[in-house]
Structure formats: C-alpha cells, structure tokens
Image (cartoon, rainbow, N blue to C red):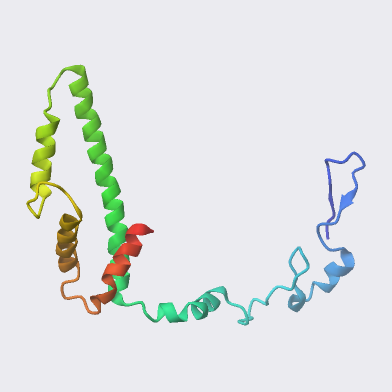
Length: 166
C-alpha cells in the first residue's frame, strides 16, 4: 500500500489516503474489498445490489404504465424538438441574411406584407391571427398522422410532450 504526501506543507507529513499494510494484506481476500473510505464493496458476482434492478423496482408502478404509444410518442417528440431547433436556425440565418441586404440597400422588403402572407398561410381558423385554436388544429392533424394504426396509442400525447420538453 502507498502513503501519499501533502506537498503543500513544508514538513512533508504523510497523509493517510490508503489503508496501511496490515489492512492491505487483509484486503487481499476478494470477499473483503473496501473502497477508499473503508466501506465494503459488493462482490462482483453478488446480485444483492444491482443499480438497474433497484431502479426498476423503485419505478415499477410507473414503468407498468409505459406503452408502445408512449415510447414512440417520446421519440417523436424528441425528434420534433431537434427538427424544430434546426428549422429555427435556418429561418434565423435566412432572416439575418435578408435583413443585412435590406440594411445595405440591396433589397427592399415589405415586412408587413410578409407577416400578413405568412399568417394567412398558417391560420387554420381564418380569424387573421395565430392563436391556441390554430395550434390545436395542427396538433390534431399531427397526432392523427403519427398515431394512425398504432396499437395502444393512448399514451402518445404524454410521451410526445415528455420528448419535446426533455
């Protein structure tokens, strides 16, 4: 076993970080392994503590509610989040490029007309504004497409929400 020295002190006094030689000899027995704090470590073939099994047991009620629909919903939500970020970056760079050209005097853009045309293209309720009702219509369309012929699609919405918010 090795003692380490505290190099910050001028006396070079040893700091005991590891067990002394008597403890090293007693720890040669594989059934008596301890960590650096002296706590007993589980044997490699010991299944008395398995972190994954413990987590599964702890979350058993919630895990029993997981369905295929909630799993594909989560995956779809995570993919939608990533795709949404990528589209936002592309749109942002496009706006920066166009606005730079407007500022430099190369082009003239009627942003009010662009806004009106964009709203008209995505406004599903026809009220001239984007609101929660429009979002609900789009969500219903997306959900209908993504849950078509999927068994146990009941948990899809919750899984999708969890995927988007993760």
